[in-house]
Length: 154
Image (cartoon, rainbow, N blue to C red):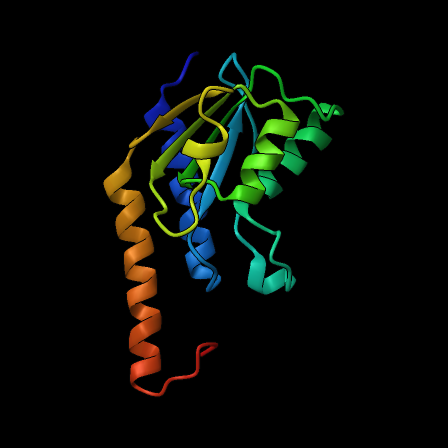
């Protein structure tokens, strides 16, 4: 059965919600084969792992490469709730992912337009509102915790 972009983006949003529950920036990713098989899913674990490279995209790429026993992800699509940063764009290009579908733009750190455009297929705005609301509510909660003197890890 062939699933559409909304199906895979919903799965990425579920991953993003797991990140939020773990007090991580709520970004989720899913890699699907060209035939519509889910190869990997992941969410940000930067805080948990104490590493700035543990973005959802990187983790999904690593898991897909391990599952397929191949570093080349030709024909695969990456669904991610937030526009990829420059580091993730590099990994996307090097892993040979064929298509990137993301929910909402990242005006501060997003790089897909400048790095990926013209090299691979890019689709944005899929479930944009849900992706944006999840991120905005997460950061609003963080700001309120700081404002009211609550420890960020509480």
